[in-house]
Image 1: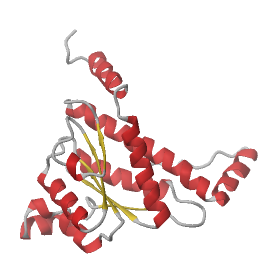
Image 2: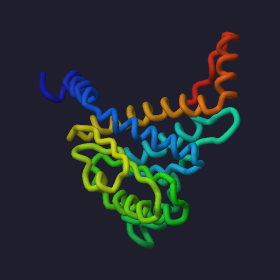
Image 3: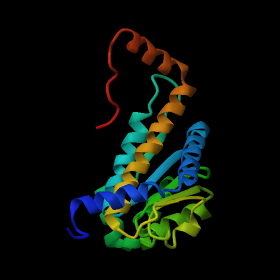
Image 4: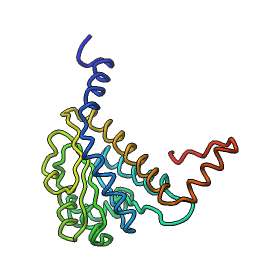
Length: 212
């Protein structure tokens, strides 16, 4: 067996899970829930696999936490408008693709949440820097040692690994953990949703999954 076999990879993944910074993940949950309570918007962004996760996370947060009535959590992925991204990249510079979108949309008190395994992508740093100047809260999900984005984030979850695939695996796990806790908290803040779920369970019906 070599270090490149499947059991070794999964062993490394399992070991890294045990080292995850749980207090920082809790802080991210609290930051997002505070945004929900205040009626603010969470903006998510990243590159490559992190771009896909930004879209995935916005879907989970926006749809999966939606109560039957009352306030909904507002989550937007800045990775989803291909025309706008390519226009800014072509007419300005690639480093500006997220910051320019935030300049149109961001309000003080909103949350700008960056996802970057390295924490050093120039467009990520530009967006976080703009968000801080605009009076928004900033958050990050990253790896390695946190990179340059760590100092730009009010809350930063750093996966303690230098293996890009391990980092990305655990970014997905962290996003799902945050989503599950937020869904529970938001349902608790909307008693009607909880009552509907209990009625459905008592009738023997399984609720539809909020996940794709």
